[in-house]
Each structure stands twice: as structure tokens, then as C-alpha cells.
Image (cartoon, rainbow, N blue to C red; front, side, top):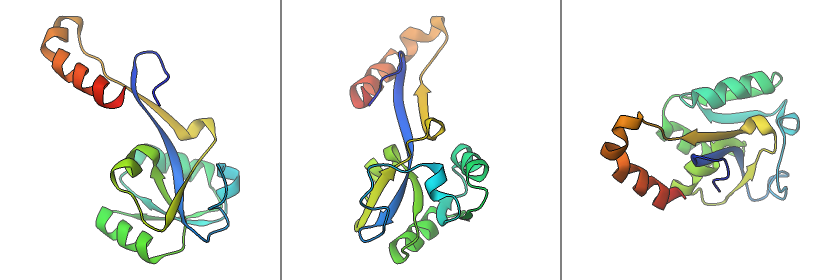
Amino acid sequence: FCTAEGAYLEDCLCVTVPLGHPLAARQSVTFQDLDGLSLLAHRNALAWMELCRRKLPHSNLLAQDSLESLHQLIDSSTLPAFGSIRALEWERQENRVAVPLQDAEARATYYLACLQGEQKRYSGLFRRVRGEFG
């Protein structure tokens, strides 16, 4: 999944929807497809929330402070919910389908870096991360 030179992790914003939802059969969606819908989200995903507020001016973002509350709402609702592909690798949601956003802005690339003089100190961490995500 990692394609950028020097990157250790790439992520993509997605929406999860129940299996019978009209978006569930889609391979991807755009912000334009979602604008105007009510969507569940985690308020502390700050970079993603700022992007969603900007790209979805006609949507009602039902942002939750607590991940526990958000998961309870997702489990008991038919509303689309924002997530990221990487986060969903650790917290699979039964009876829901993840549909990635195809907009370029909905992608993030993360890098690990350290001062050249500190490379030896962090070499174990870099090897572990490359092994896990590379």
C-alpha cells in the first residue's frame, strides 16, 4: 500500500455503510457523492474533520468525542460513517462495507524521519515499521 518514496504508511479516507445501503455496491465515492448526507465521524480526527467540513458544506457531520459512543452509533445506525482504511484494519465493523473516497485530498502519506545523528538510535524502530507496514 506504500508507494511514495520514503513513506512508511499511506492512508485513505472512506465511509462505511450497512450492507443494504445504496453506496455499499460502489467501488469508490467522491465528496460530491456524499455532500448533503448526514454522516457519523470522530471529532478528534482533526485533519480529516477539517477536510470533510470544507468539502461537504451541505452535509450534517454528526461528530462524536468518544470513540465508544461513535461505535455504538455506527452499530445501531444506517448512516454512513467516516473512517480510514488503516483504522479499519484494526477495528473491523461487522455488517458494514468500507467504500474509499477517490478524491486526491482523501489520501494521506506518513513518513518517519529523524536527525542523521540519531539514525543508529532509531534503527530498530525503522526496521520494525518497515517490516510491519512495508
